[in-house]
Amino acid sequence: MSATSIFIMIFGVSLASLLPRILPVALLSRISFPPVFIRWLSYVAPAVLGALTALSVLAPQGTIHISINNIYIWAFIPTLFSAIKTRSLFITLIVGIVSMALLYNLF
Amino acid sequence: MNKKELIQGMRDSIPIVLGYFPLGFAFGVLAVQVGLSIFQSVLMSVLCFTGAGQYISIGVMQAGGAVITAILANILVNLRYFLFATSMVPHYKDLPTVPASILSYGLTDETYAVAISRYQTRPATIAYMAGLNLTSHIAWITSTFIGAALGMLITNTDQYGFGFALPAMYTCLLVLMINKRSDVIAALSAALACLVIGWLIPASMANMSNIIIATILGATIGVIIHERD
Image (tube, rainbow over all chains, first blue to last red; front, top):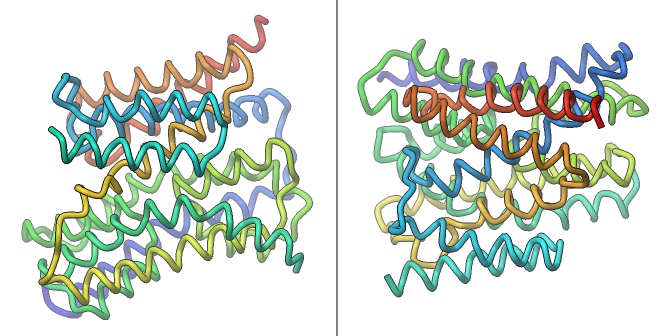
């Protein structure tokens, strides 16, 4: 790609990622939603986190990999346990990273 | 601007910063290898701030694809932000529209997850958004720069376990978001749906449309169960 194409790509990708984040907040903030839609929106967070967690653990390289050889699944177990037990993001992160480092270097 | 809120936002961004570092670093390394200059790589992280989207773009470049392919793929990949941003709107109703809109540029999977978890108990503020989103964005830009500059000397960051930073963060935020039975069902149905869709249509894994469909499905199931309870 030429330098011009690269810059066009960067600005195009920028618009494609900027507009969906900014427009709802810029345009919808004066509108009040019906209660059932607000309730629906409140389920977006648990739903998307469920999807992201499942994908990040069961498809760590972008393709689904459900097997005992997937060390992400093994690292997930102590991580989930510490998340439930401590409800602390920091401790969970440390447990997750240390578990992964141990698993990666041992197996 | 409320200093306490700003600092709290910065503090809450620490796990995101840890997770972004290896990802941004790897992006910088790959971008330079594909033919972007250090300046172009950093510019992309400044202007786009979309992990998956940026990886896809340089993937398209490497495959010799067209600019329009990279942009179209990004429209698809970033559509989920429309959903996230809309679900933030009720929390932002007491905030001034212009700064809230501008700071929404820093909305990512990770900043969304951290912010929505905080807004369950505390009101949203501009200062908190600034602390959380800008710190995360700066980490993304800085790590891209380091990766692009040191591109040739890459070492394997996997052995330090950083590859599990984002999964660990998602796991904890998921646990924090779950307060009732219908939350569990919404999360599990979305998890199952995105795996099944990803398995049936592998292309949806690459453009992340399986996440969008799964989220819509999971949230709808959540509401239906909520109404019955």
